[in-house]
Length: 95
Length: 147
Image 1: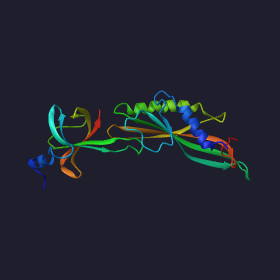
Image 2: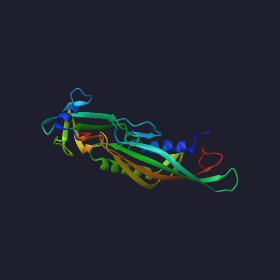
Image 3: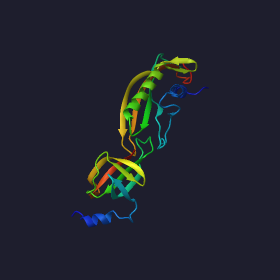
Image 4: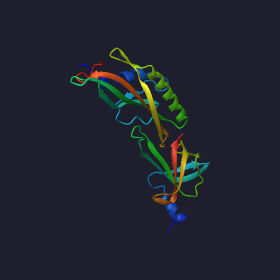
């Protein structure tokens, strides 16, 4: 049974680890920011960046996302992403 | 006894490839741990494989050796990734077409192909593996001396 808006809002809560208030297209968008280590090819150190948001968030590929003063670009929008089917995950890269 | 010819050849390759326009001093051989996050264009040199053919029948045997090596160009950038890798490839191919010097002797280096791959992360990372071959002769009892 899919989560309703109130349940989704509780899932993205300011008390949760990774909570951020991102800015997308001038709008404040709450989300959970994930920043985990991910080496490329086992050769190059790096990170896998993503922001979990409500599906209603208006963000598409190439949109700029501002998080804590740092600009990122949306490289992929994953609706109903894997283990979080009621949410949208924005895969980000640094700009 | 001098270092194995593989070590001498690897050192000569690094010397030849150091100072190219795009990669500068960032040339590494035998690097096992990941390159830093804030990577600038970098070259990795590895000797992948060698095949030896006997030129004589008995020991000590004179051997013709064909050494396969890889020069990997690595770039981490949100822009012009392919163009930068292609520029590095051009610089590497031109540099190695001039050959290398090992123990005072010139060895030709021949380009044999390339493969490309890229991966998305906090910034896109692209790698271009350029393969080359070097032919040389050595005695089975003296792998540290060119024949």
